[in-house]
Length: 99
Image 1 (cartoon, rainbow, N blue to C red):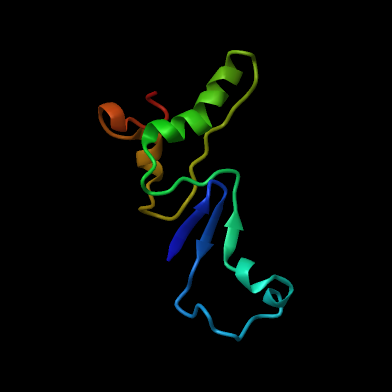
Image 2: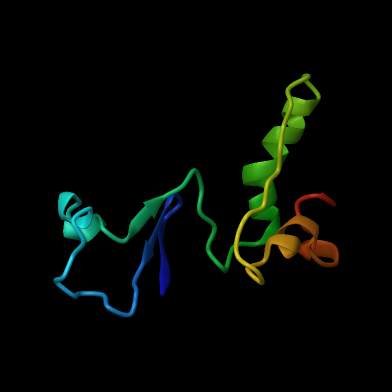
């Protein structure tokens, strides 16, 4: 399972969570941090499209008008919502590009 811890951290819990058999790389990381991953920004499944746009794309657009290059890049596994995030749906569900 994946849990959003805060706006920059997610935690993954695999099927063997709690197992005491760690790999050698895991031994240098405190147990409470072993399955946590940090990102620039994390959006949970309840996040509305407008919030994603305001936090990611709107600052890029402002920069474009000042001559600064920008890139919107969606990455993830198949069926994870990349196209919906970029293109969106109708009206309030519009993605970040139509805004």
